[in-house]
Length: 389
Image (cartoon, rainbow, N blue to C red; front, side, top):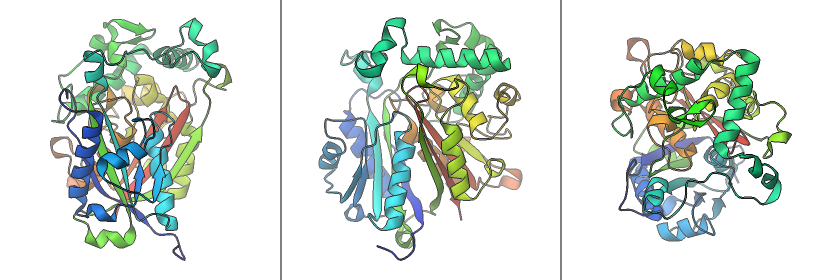
């Protein structure tokens, strides 16, 4: 164990094939993403001694490790929904800093879209009728309905409008337009969002994330491995995690997400302020998630999220570029999206985002990024602050 905590960097990242992937299994997407991330890092597979994975197999991450031919000394399979990847990244960074692991692979893959298309699974999001959830299911409390109810509360309390929520989807699509990996790139308008079929009031179809296939991987390493890597490191500066509730009746305030806690912790530990962040990658299964998370991370005051997004701040050339790849609303959303947030944040900080690269005055690359994942129906949150140099 090191005498002082080691610094930890993202040294590799990659996407697998994404979008419409009918010919590969989830395991194959894991392997494809892992191989690409290792190649991106320049490190040999033999140095990987940690693995974090969730969402696949009976004994995740043991099954994934076996498929990848790894025998890790440190593992994590924390399952808290879409926030799992930011939470596991925090755990992995702590393990590497303490010397319990040296190089940790975080990897994910899903064929959610292809499985539904082939009849291998349903699109039901009621999450069963056991445990505390059994008391809500009879009232139609599916996942989308829970988010919709929370959005309505924010609208009632703060005057947030449907048009403002729709702007989240419009700006996500505008960011996706320049991303060749995005599943949907054609422009949409506020009217397009408002006029779509209602999924759960007030959400129409374009308020909701797309369903895609795909995977990705991120490689974390201790600072002494950085000189041997192929790319400039992106450092893990601070992390935070928080679990709020599962039963809606136990959620104290529908207008406050657990990112209010995870974000505060991450910023404090990183020693930076929200107004110093150049880009934000935020879990966006629904438009309301983006809006309320922006508030809770401190990018605008509580209740002012609608005005913030209305002003076009989320665009690549806006005050705070958000979901620069198009997010779950337009780019990809294969079941759980949390790890994709980290991939896009790293890609932007490295200056490797191609046509959808964010640049400041004089062509300056972003220096600080935040990735914040949300799980369940605002049940959990994990936030990671990353930086160059």
